[in-house]
Image (cartoon, rainbow, N blue to C red):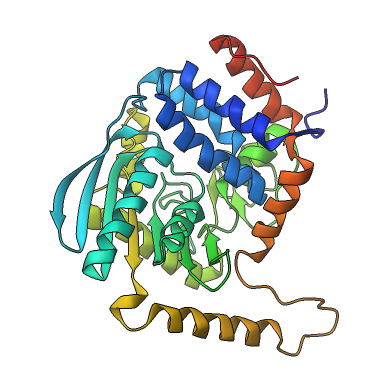
Length: 350
C-alpha cells in the first residue's frame, strides 16, 4: 500500500474511532470526547497535521505515563481578571478547553481575562480555542509554546518552539474571523506528515542536524525548522514563547527540551478573552467589524485574483465540504492508527 495514497472517511465515523481509541487507552468518556472534538475539527478544516495524525503519539504518551489519562485541571492561583491552571499532565485539548472556557467566563465579569495553563500536552489546533472564546461573545487570543524545534534567525540549532498564535474576533453571522498560524516557516506537523508519506518539504524551511538546508522530511525532523518571515517572524516566535512560558512559570528552550526528554511536558499556553461590552455596545462592535470585512472583501482586486478572503474563511468552507464528502486520510497515517487500534482491541471503520 502506497504511503501517498488516501482514503476518504466519514467525519462521524472518524470521530467515533478517535473517541473509542482514547477511551480504550484509559481516558474518561468526557475527556475522549473533548480531545476528539479538537482532532476532528483540525481534519475537517484541512489541518491534517494537527488531527488524526497526532493520535498515535497521544496514545504512546498515555502508555508511557507522560500524559495522565485521568487528569483533572484545576486553578492554583486566581484574581478577578486572571488565573493560573495546573493541567495535571492532561492531554492538551483537555487542559486547553478548560482554560479557554474559564477565560471566557471570567471575562464576562472582569471585562477581560488572561488564563495560563501549565503542565498539559500539545493542544493541537490553537484556533479551536480562540474560536471557542469568540463564540462566547469575546475576542479570543491564544499564545502557545512547544518543545524546541525552530532555530533563531541566523542560527541552525533548535531552541524555540513552533509557538502558535491565534486571534478570533466575533462578527455578525455564524463564523468569527479566525487567524491561526505557527510562527515557524512550516508547521512541524507537515514535516511529520511528509516523513510518513515520503514527500519532500519546500526549500528554505528547514535544516538538517549538520545545519545545511534540506528538503528531506526525516532529515529536517532531526534538525531544525526556520522561523517564518525572517527577523520579524523570529521576533514574534521568541516573544510568544516568553508569554506562554516564563510568564506562566513554565519552561522554554533547552530546559523544556530536557523536560520532554525526561517524560514531562513542562510548557504553558496563554488564553486571553476581551469582552467588547467592556468598551461599548457589543452589537455596534460587531456591526463595525462586519462593515470593515465587507469593505475589505469588496476592494479592487489585483489581476487574476477571484476573491479576497478574510482569515478563517477558507477553513470554514473546507469544513462544510468535508462534512458532506468525507475526510481524506493518508494510508500511512491510517496504518499507524490501525496498529494502535489492534493493540487496544478497537475495531476500525469498514
